[in-house]
Length: 107
Image (cartoon, rainbow, N blue to C red):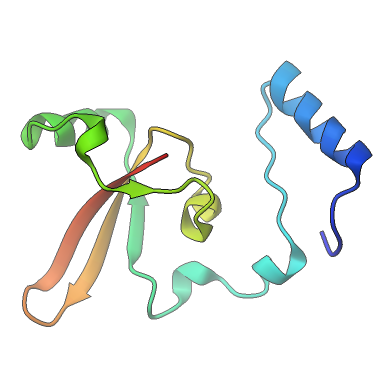
């Protein structure tokens, strides 16, 4: 949208999300001008499926609350449509280690 969403439109979106189980995400036009995942400073993000999440937690003997967090309103989390409880694998380039992998849970 170019301008703010009207109150009537907000009600319609909320109604779709609650009664029809439809997930709608409203983006401002200015947010879509640049693909943030292609920016050189943004590391590679990969959303894990439920099986990979269970394997990760089992491998490192963790509970979901022990993982670092990423907000569901974070621009990259919004881009991938992450919901609360999903885990993302973040791969960063590192001068000393070559690459550094971390995992975050969406809250």
